[in-house]
Structures are given as C-alpha cells and as structure tokens.
Image (cartoon, rainbow, N blue to C red; front, side):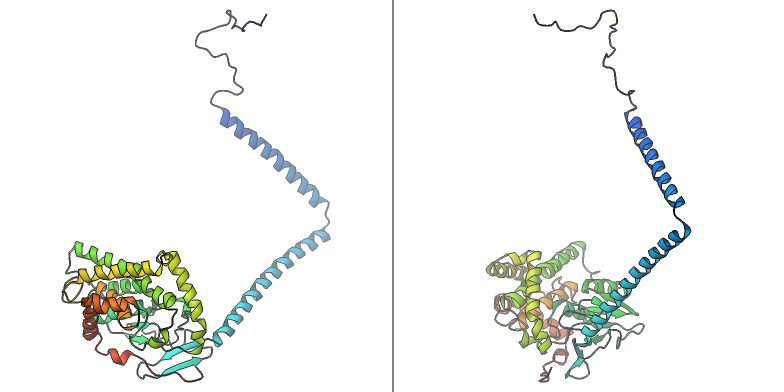
Length: 378
C-alpha cells in the first residue's frame, strides 16, 4: 500500500502563516552575504599583514638595503631605456626629413624651386599679428590648386575681400605637411587653424561676418544640404575618377611633379581607393558611381537655373565657393572624364557659372598658375 500524503498537524496549524522555515531572516539576505565577504576579507588581510611582519622581522638591515637598491636601479634603468628609445626615434625622423622633397614656391616669381634638406617646419613661417596666411599645396598648371578644399577656402577669402598672403612653401605634396596638418590651413594672429571648414568658421567669427544674412532659414537649410552633397558625395566621385579609375595618369598634366612624388603615387591611389570604400561610394561599380555623380550635377544645374549664384543673390556665398572648387576640377582638371563632358555639354549653366566666378573673383587666374618645367635632377 502506498504511503499516504503527509498532512500538516492540526494542533499547530495557524491560517495565513507559512510553514517554510527561511534559511535567513526575511529582508536580510544582502546584509548577511555582504557581512560574510567582509569577514573573509578581514581574515585574509590579517593573515597577509602577519606574514609580511614576520618576513620583515627576519630580514637583516643589509639584505633590506640591497633589495631597496635593486628596486631603485631597475626603476632608473627603465626610465633611461624609455628616454633613449624616444631620442632614437626622434633622430630617425630627423634623418628621414632631410631626404624629403619639399615644394617652395615664391609667389612673386613663377619658377618652382625644389628644396632638399632638413629645413624645420617653423623656419619661414609668416607669423605676424593681423596677417592671414593661407597654406596649401603648390599651384597647379590649369587651376590655382588641384585640390577642391584649398581652392574653396581661397575663393571664400576673395569673395569677402579678406586680404591674405599665400604660402605653399614647405608643404610636402606627398601628404606629410608640417605639424601633421592637412592642406589647407591658415595662420592668423599667431594661431594655426587646420581643416577648411574650421578655417571658415574661425574667419567668420574673427571678422564678425554674416555671409548669409540676406537669406531666410529655408534657403540657409537648402544651402547646407547642397554643401553636404558637394563635399561628402560629389567630392568622392572626383577622387575616385582621378586616383582610381584614371590611375592618376592625368596628374602630370595638371601639376608639376618631382620624381620623389611620382614614386608615391601608387600608394596615394591605394589610399584613396580604401578611403572611398569605407566612405561607401567606393563599394559601387564605376558605372554606378558615374551615374550617381551625374545625378548630383543634374540636381545642381536645376537648383542654379538661370541665376548667377546658387542662392540667387548678387554675391557668392559659401555654397558658391564650394561648387566652384568642385566643378573647376571637372571642367579644367579632368580631361577625358565623363564628368567634364556633363559639365561642358549637358548642364552648360554649371560651366558658365565657373567661368563667371573665375572672371569676377579670380582676375589674376593666369598669374596664379605654374607651368615652369622642373629641373632634370628634381
């Protein structure tokens, strides 16, 4: 016969009271667990302290002195090793810089001088209060600069009548600019500001400018959107065609290139291809990229319409400077590209816009070009 189900003794049963006896008092579990850990920690600490007290008491003074001396020596030796390692790296970098080919362009004369040697970045810096110095890569053969962002910044200075000195001395075209800055940057009131957008913001604030004060919020928003289209999408179409699809074959037609620079061109091409891949546009096929950039050009053409400038005023804005810098590359520096044909023939108002900006804000355009041949040994 099966055992009967156990029943609660009737003599001790009280309604509403649980007969499950808790292991710890209700509500005190956390406190009891914490107290247990503390007790264990205290006992372990007491054991460690007692161990070291016994150890030290059994060590004579001579042995202790030797141990302290050894620890000190190791510390000093580590510091010395770090110091000499750092100095060795500095000497190595200095030796490499002596072999670096640096462009040095004097704006008052057209010949290009190739400077070899260990000229430090600080030498020749025009740091005078109140003087704005624009630093960028050397002048091109067809445009004052073959890079869009320096051309945008310089055009912005001209549009707003800001006097500046142009300096492309000591800017290595291979991409290793002084103080790890990328071209362009400016020096103003003894301060260096890098990145074209940071430069624009600094200049606007410094001179108390309101470049878009005549336009409402809607037009400002549209201008911002088109700036992003130009700088973060169309720009990569230019970069991909020049450095990847064309393989930089047309570079010699638009920029004076010494032999040292020619040696690094394949590395630059690979770097641009990788950067475009991570941007996203580089993951597309060349046909898809060309189609996407042509769509950008169509949108720009429709937005510009018959106006002289994109926002319809009587003076160029930042958007016009950005568009001019990008479209100038397509119009004058990209022979054989599908974009050049699109700007010249399909959307002719974009071509007219470039010529109009050039005539109004770059009357000295031809004087800002450099077509002097390099010496044979450069």
